[in-house]
Amino acid sequence: MAMIELRDIQFSYPDHTPILNGASMHLDHGQKLSLTGPNGAGKSTLLRIILGLQKPQKGDVRIFDQSRTKEADFHDVRRRVGLVFQDPDDQLFCPTVAEDIAFGPLNLGRTTDEAIEIVDRVLEDLDLLHLRNRITHKLSGGEKRLITLATVLAMEPEVLLLDEPTNALDAKNEGRLLEILSGLPQAILLVSHNPAFRAKIAPCAFHFEDGQLVAR
Image 1: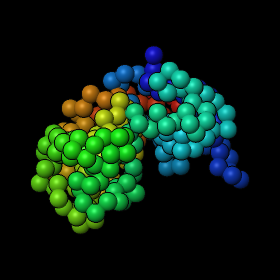
Image 2: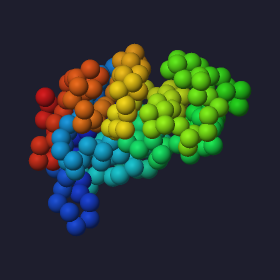
Image 3: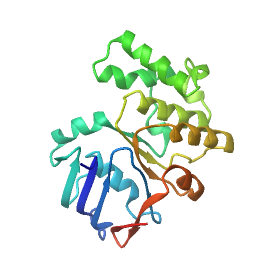
Image 4: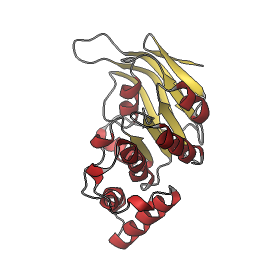
């Protein structure tokens, strides 16, 4: 059973030619795959379709062996699939790092004490405890990227979707991110223009060609 399976997905924005035109792919348990292709090929759009944030005009979206067509179908998906946005500022909105990380677990019904425990555990696992009480908007770009990943991992997702995770990272923080991701058990779907990073995290790839996905 594939964790994510897309069949013959077609999608176009209003008054534009289709960017996805029969795209199909699957992601299995523990598998780590990259999505490659030029800007505008549909990589970020595909991630949003997986989460139900955009709806294809045609095709079948199957997540965790269930067909997902209605908004209600994706509530469970968003609890089990974590997306790390391309821009950390789109994802971090609480005053402090601890509050940002606790937000997801609290929304999932965890108690305050349980959420605090998760915050400390995730930050310790990522060697980021020193950032716990920092003001989020005062973090460096690299620190924001790592904390964004922490907010997603606090939800204990089964699948990680990573949209250009190395954007604006210096060499030190990119190395730290690489170290963290290499040790994670989750299945990963990675969008990245960084070929060296892709080769280390998810060397197998689906490449966008004329709106379709070709295994590489």
